[in-house]
Figure (cartoon, rainbow, N blue to C red):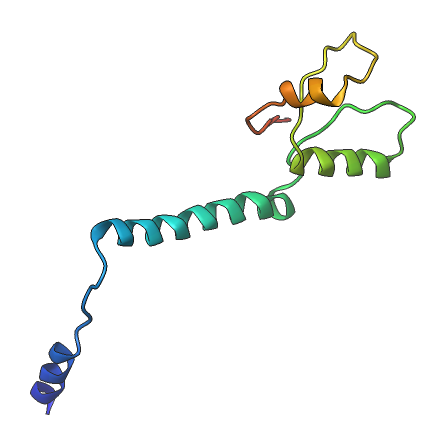
Length: 105
């Protein structure tokens, strides 16, 4: 009886109708999507992704809002002694293209 089952299983083997590049693409896509999902949802499990320096007059609600906004939006560099908000075109040209990570003790 086991020999009949083994014979049946050998006959039902799957066939690959794609090439190695296709298999690499769909395997890589899954790992990339999992990586992106883990990065985005790590905020809930690991802690706050970044701490922003905010003015003293801001309440804690505004601080949480600004940190959440910075987490999902692009950020740009503004010198510490500059009190004026740059124009939109200037901000877009100075956007940082990497994720800013700050490790706090």
